[in-house]
Image (cartoon, rainbow, N blue to C red):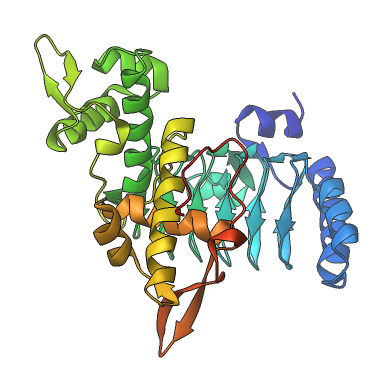
Length: 353
């Protein structure tokens, strides 16, 4: 077994081996060219990165400068963005998932050295793989040490040194990095998805069924069921089984500040457009040129999250626009008549006369 084979196998190897030195030198020459490429040459930069990396998905962007050892041991998914100063020591495989973002000056080190002085002075190294899941965000100046895996949807606070595996849907920070909280946006989104399946009869509520259908561990499944029980979404029957306490997914009271996407069915979608038309009719007839979440809640007798959803829908359809006035965001009407609204063809609603 040569030194490169030892390196890739996770064994101790000599980093000053001639073949490895040649490969690192070739990669660094390519990186020097990349780092000196004019920033506006997007196509040229993309082509150079793909020559360096082992694999990369669409919408790849790494701000200059970028440094790595070999490049070919790095695999990156779709929609990756790294700010300035990324360094990856890729003696072992580095796998990065989809929709991952790195802040400036992040460091991924697969390489470690012997604790014994004599062996370390011989130039021995060992490389252990790093795996980063989907939808992960590393803050600036984060360092990931050899052998670490970071689960989907995790967030690592700026300046952290990650020395051990990070579970999915958690927030870690510090030196060494420790769990400081759960990513509640993700947890509530999963609760929405579980509830939607349960209401449709596609899943019976139990820890094992949630583990199986959502590919999550036992601890997280228990935590999700506990959150659902506390929120009044479900109630415990017996033997670890639960039943729903609500009749519609839109009966869930999502905590303010949590961002989730509700499943969209035509009946609910239609009802939302009817509410939008009712709100606009009221506002236009009252001579106002703006609206607010509170006003929509009052007119429609709905909750905060549904009111914000209506505003988002109106903004996406150019019915309203957000403007800054005296440091505050105001929702201004972008129309002067209901006749200017383009209602989706699938929606059948009653227009005011």
